Amino acid sequence: MRILIVPLIYFVFFFGSVHSANAQLSGIVVDAQDQYPLEYASVAIYGRSNNKLIAGVVTDKDGVFSITNLKAGDYYLEASFLGYQKHSIPSIVFAGNGNSQDFGVLPLQLGRGSNLNEVTITTEKQAVFHKIDRQVFDTKKYQSTVGGNAMDVVKNLPSVSMDGLGTIRVRGSEGFTVLINGKPTQGTVSTILAQLPANALERVELITAPSAKYDPEGKGGILNIITKKGAVNGTFTQVNLRGGMPSIEGYDAKVASKRYGVDATLNKRTAQWNLSAGASYQRNDIAGRREGALFIVNMPENKTTFLPSDGERSFDEVTYNGRFSVAYTPNEANEFSMGFFAGKRTKERLADIVYYDNHAIPLVGAAERQYTFAYYNHNLRIRKGDFALGSFDYAHTFENTSKITTAFLYEYTFLGGPTENDNLGYPNNATIYQKEFNTNDNPLYGARFTIDYQWKPFSFGLLETGYQYRDLDHNGTFIYERDEVQVPEFSSAVS
Image 1 (cartoon, rainbow, N blue to C red):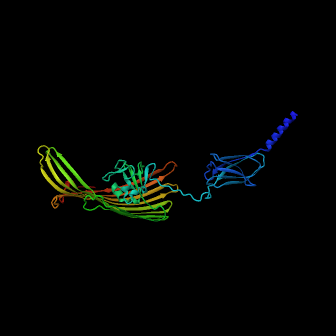
Image 2: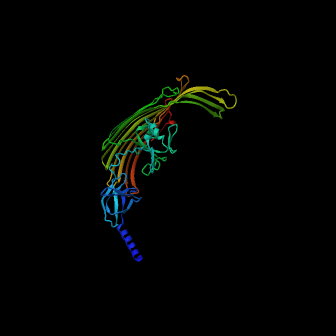
Image 3: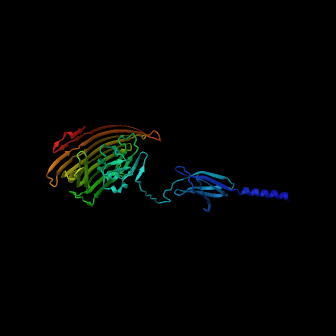
C-alpha cells in the first residue's frame, strides 16, 4: 500500500500544477513623441465579458510593467497617464497554457484637452537677467523713472553711480561707451542719456565683457540702450504726462522752478512693416542757494583775506526731441531698417552771488582792516547738447543660416555754449568792474560703415568677421573776451 500511494500522490500534484499554470504580461510605457519612459503610468487588465477589473499595476522609473497570475480567459488592456490619451489593446486571449506575452513599447499620445479644459500660467519677468557677456535690465521695473529720461534709469542700475555734478561712472570708471540700439555714438554720455525719454526705453544692457565686434573705446564697459519697437501687429499709442509740485523751498530765486513734461509714442506694425514715431518735451529746474565763507592766507604779504558770500545758484534744464524708425521685412531672408533721432538740450547754471564783506587783515600785528569791499557777481553758464543720429541697416540670412549685416550711421553732436561772468557794484549794480565772456563750441560730425558676417559651422560655436570704416570731424572754437575785447592768450581753436 505504501509503495502504491506515494506515486499516486506525486502524480496528482504534478498534474494539478500543470493544469493551473498562470500567464504573465509585460511591456514598457513611453511618451509617443520623444520615446521617454513614463514612470507611475497605470496599466490595467479587464475581462471582456463583464468589463471587470482583473489586475492593475504602475510602471517603474524605466516605464516597465509586469502583470502575473493571469488565468485562462479573454481580456483587454488599458495603459494611461495624467495628461495623456489612453492606449488600449482590445483583445488578449489566454488558453491556459501559462505562456507569457511581452507587448514591447506602448506609446501614449499627449491629451487633447480631455483632462483639462484650460490652464493659465501667469509669471513676472525678472528685472535683471545675465548672459555670458552682459547684464540685461528691464526698464519697466523702474517705475520711479516714468516721465523722466534715460539718466534716471541708468543711475538706478547696479554698478552705475552718479555724483552731484551729473558725472556717471560704470564700475567706478568714467571711460565707457554708449550704444543706441547697438549703434555707437560719439557724444558725451550725459548729453545722449538726457535726450532719451525713459518711457521710450525697452531695456538697458551693461556689456561687461565685449567681444572683438565692439570698439575698444570703453574701458569701463558698454551701455547699450534698446528703445521700444512694436511687438505685435496693430497700432499702439502711448502718451505720458509729467508734473512737479511747487518747490518746498524757493531759495529766493528770481524765477520759480518749473518741472513738467510730455512724451508720446505711435507705433504701427504689420506682417512686413514696423513704423514708430515719437516726441518728447521735458523741463526740469533745480533751485539752489550758495552760502560760503572763504579765507586766504598770504604769508609773503602778511595778510588774511576774507570773502563771505551769499546768493542764488540754480539750474534750468530744457530738453525736447523727436524720433522715427521704420523696418521692412519682405521675407524671412531679408530685413531693412532705418532710424532717425534728433534732440536739443539746454542747461543753464545761474550763480548770482553777493560778496558782501570782503576784507583783509594782517597776519601779525594789529587786527585793523586793510580794506572793505562788496560786489555782485553774475555768472551764467549755458551748456547745449544738440544731437542728431541717422542710420540705415540691411541684414540677409542665407539658407545655411549664415548671416551678413551692413549698417551705415551718421551723427551730429553740438557740445558747448557760452559763459558770461560780470562783476558789478553792490548794492548799485549799475557800476561795472569787469565783464567776461567766453564760448566753448565743440561740434562733432561722424560717419560709420560696418559689415559683419556670421557663420555657424559647428554646434558649439560661432565664427564672425567684419569690417568698419569711420570718419570723425571734431572741431572746437574757444574765444575769451574781457570787457568786449578778445584776449588772444586765452582764446584757441582745435581742428
